[in-house]
Image (cartoon, rainbow, N blue to C red; front, side, top):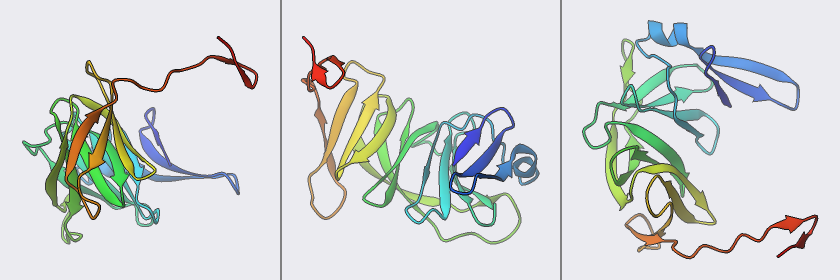
Length: 188
């Protein structure tokens, strides 16, 4: 899945059979009251049915149904996340961080809304961590990490509870040294 900023459109790339499918284009989204400018981050759910994406300038987190092309707003102009940016799945749960505020939230979307477009589904936001201008967030081996536009750029968010959320932040002040290599051998 890619976002084509020039069109703007979401496109599904099927590399196996060399096909490109356009899922949502600006005109279609605008007709539904959803502008597609400035998509900052996107993540697909584990089964590939939904694509979540943030739009800081529109102050929105949205969900695109890959099969139907239906685009829904999970939240918009929420004071807790006025400029949603960084986005990831952590242990199957959607997480979002504002580009200017320090809090990372778990997002639990409400059931799909019915009725006229644009569809505002709504979501519950649960605070899970604090950072400092989180630019990107990602999970690796069950650990949540953040890259920040701050004095401490790399941080590890560690779970204080094996069974769910509740994080404390751990600064990675002494990251592993980067050793330049030539071929397969390290050089010093």
